[in-house]
Each structure stands twice: as C-alpha cells, then as structure tokens.
Amino acid sequence: MTAPFSAPRTFKVITYGCQMNAHDSERISGLLEDAGYVPAAADGDPDVVVFNTCAVRENADNRLYGNLGHLRPTKSANPGMQIAVGGCLAQKDRGEIVKKAPWVDVVFGTHNIGSLPVLLERARHNAGAEVEILESLEVFPSTLPTRRESTYAGWVSISVGCNNTCTFCIVPSLRGKEKDRRPGDILAEVRALAAEGVLEVTLLGQNVNSYGVEFGDRFAFGKLLRACGSVEGLERVRFTSPHPKDFTDDVIAAMAETPNVCHSLHMPLQSGSDAVLRAMRRSYRAERYLGIIDKVRAAMPDAAITTDIIVGFPGETDADFERTLDVVRAARYSSAFTFQYSKRPGTPAATMEDQVPKAVVQERYDRLIATLEEISWAENKKLVGRTLEVLAAVGEGRKDGATGRLSGRARDGRLVHFSADPAAGIRPGDVVHTTVTYAAPHHLNADGPLVSHRRTRAGDAWEAGRVTRTPGVSLGMPTIGSPPPQPTTNSC
Image (tube, rainbow, N blue to C red; front, side, top):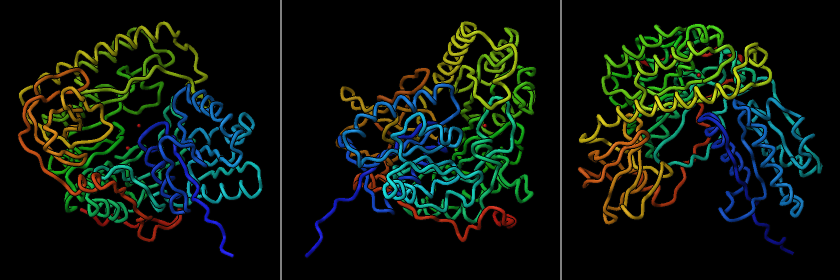
C-alpha cells in the first residue's frame, strides 16, 4: 500500500543585528531548504521558527525572550512545532536559553550553523532540547548553501571574527579570532553571483581592511577590490566595516580607480575624544581619523561617508562629547548609526567606573542627533538638481500610492524615492537615472520624469519570482588551521 503523502515542513527565520547576521540567515534558509524544508507562507504558522540573534545591544536578551514568550502558546497548541535559537546571543547564553525558555528545541552557536538540520532532527527524535555550541570555527560558513532573498544584491563574506579588543564590544568572544577566506574563493562567489544577474555585492567582515592578516599581506584588501573590477556584469561593489587603524592609502586608491567600487565609505568613529578612544582601546585618534577622511575626499570628492558613534561611554565628560561633535562637523557625514552606551556583561567597559547617568546620556544623544541631521540635510541639499543612478529596490522605504514613487539606492548609498510611470514597468533590480528635486535629512526625492530606465536580468529574475540560490561555492576550502595560500589576485 502506498504511504500517504506528507507535506514538507515549513520554516521561518527571524533575524536581529548586523549584515553578518542577515547573511548567516540566508545560509540558515539555504540549509533548511536543502534538508527538504520550505519557506512558510506569510500568514501561516511555520513548523520551524529560527531566531538568529544579536548580542551587541543591552536589550537583545529582552527582545529574544519576549518573542519566545509570545510563541509559547502557539507551541503549546502545536507540539510538533520546533523553535531554534542561534547567533551571537546563543553563543553567549548557551544552555541558559533552555533554562529560561524550556519550550525551545535547539540552541546553536555562531560556529556551527551547518549543524542546524541535524540538531532539529535529533531534537524531534529524542523529544528533548539539543544545545550545541562550538568554541571555534571549523569551516567557513561560505561553504554552506545559501538562499539569497535578493536577485540584485548579495553579501559576500571575506573573513569572519575579529582580532581587536575594543572594551565595549563582545563580538570577538562570540565570533572568534579573524579567519580570512582565500581570494580565489571570494572571487568565485562574486563571479557566481554576477553570472546569476546580481548587480551589487557587499564584501563583509568584522574588520574588512585587516583582510590578509593570516597570509601576511597588508595590501590584500585593496587587491581584492581591484580584482572585483574585472568581474563581468558586476556594477557595484561595497564593503563593511573597515577599522580606521588598518585603513591604508592603497584602499583609497583602489576605491577611486576601480569603476565598479562605489564611492561610499562606512568608517566607524565611536568617539571624537582621544581620551575616550583610549579607554575604548581604539588604536587611532581623532587627528588620524580625520586625516583618512580628508584623503578619501581628495581622491573622491563625491564620496558619501557614514559612521557609528557611541554616546555616554564610561568616563565621557562634557568636553569629551564636544570633541565628538567637533569631529562630526568636520567629517560631514551623510548618515550615522548612533548608540547610547549599554553595558554588555563580559566586556571590560561594563565594570569601568564613572558610568554616565542615563539622563546625561540622553541629553547628549539628542544633541548629537540634531547635529547629524543638520549636516546630512545640508549635504543632501547639495544634490538637488543632480542626476543620479539608482538601483531600484524592494524594502528600501516606501512605494507611495499617491505619487507613484518607487525607492532605491544611489551609487553613494543614499536612499532615493523617485517617481515613475507605472507603464514603465520598473522592477526591483532595474537601473534608472533620475534628477533630484528635493532633499530631506535621510532621503532624496526625484519627482520629475526619468532620464533613463534600463531593464536588467536581476529585474527579470525578481519579476519571475526567482530566488538566487548558491550551493557552497568554496573551491576546496580546508578546515581552519590549514595555511591559506598567498593571494593570487591583482575590517568595527
């Protein structure tokens, strides 16, 4: 007798945190699909829910456990449902997660994403929670299958981990020491994406411009940028995040001289006070930082520079904060990610004296936001009347039904809302040229007729509902510990 048909189990991945986490979630989805799972419908209850967590902010724990609490009634009503928790918070909290939320089925860390399908099956078979946390990476995550949500843009990891010891940051203890991929493997992944029609890649690492530390080539990252310039069909290359201490002039030259490398730079500042930078264990000072910005602008006057800033680090005085405002005014950022300092257990800063009162931090934070918005608005106003190339995107703000505006990113990373005749049939992944008519602090509007519209293979793929799927594209990636070869091509 033929066995009754069994529908495949469905899954949903919920992601918190940075681009690295988002890219890890693409790998989690790819692994689950390879194991026979299918993405859940938007309005349905999935059979498997995976939380890919972040541990950088103080409220990360509350956010995870709050969401786990909301799922408990659903889990009780559907005992066959499974809940898995991975990522940085899982690496940090380990078995504490199932103690606090015993309805969780699987906990896995940053170093063993590839174990998830096996852990889920083991938990079902044993009818108990499975917790597996590795202490170090065994193989690069890029060897894993990946389900990429975008047909036009993709992330490519060039390294994992971090060798820095910033006193506010818990990432090195959760992601481990820096491990670099072979240049040939990186370029193979970039070429594979471009062959699928992807127009834009972002090179990812905790500290991308220290890439090459394992094979002793401090100029490896600049060489990698130049090599991306030879990839057929690739129109835009971005990277995040570099560290000012490792930023070298050859990277600036590579950015300026490689046509498909975008003139956008995310350069974390954290503080403009040398005293605070010293306490943060950030091995650069404000003068060095602004010197890099000056060199970037000299080579690329149109460069858009963004940053990260922490307000209220322990011991920060009013004078220290004023130094931060001085650097902000000198750097003229197009935008910034701003954070009120929060203690992270396990970091040196958490036990420092002179923790700044919350009310003082909030007042400084408000002043910083006001200063940043004034500057970004003034910088954006300079672009009114200019024609920009925009890569149409989905999820980049809004589609305004009243005005017919669509959204996308200019080459310098700025968000642009542009008007388009519905008859033009612009799809995410298509490229348009449009003229800026209005500037706001965080976006630009282009309400006139389009200058041009180019249909792309990425747009075709989006219209057809295709998802870019790449198997592990590593070319024989060894386990960690094997010495990588010398680069063969012309980081927080």
